Length: 94
Image 1 (tube, rainbow, N blue to C red):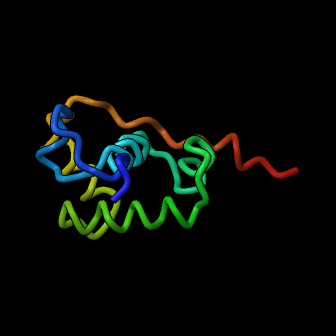
Image 2: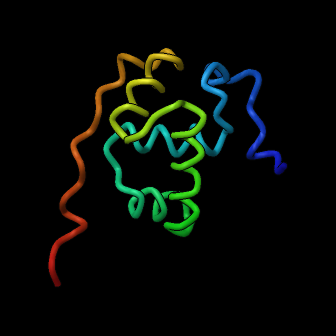
């Protein structure tokens, strides 16, 4: 296990069981970002982000993004974080 994949004990998200990287991905999911946008933001491949998302779903017991967001906010104490509207400008036709 890489250090980035180990749960971070001092992190309030420890109750969710997510690794530091998974929590970072979950924060971006909760702001309305797509897998592609998360991949670009974190300099990862989209496949890697999909793997993180699948592990997040399994750890939270979620079957979709909205359920994962709700469970993560509830368990991490981030219930007051407003979701950001998805950024549609990056999909402009060229």
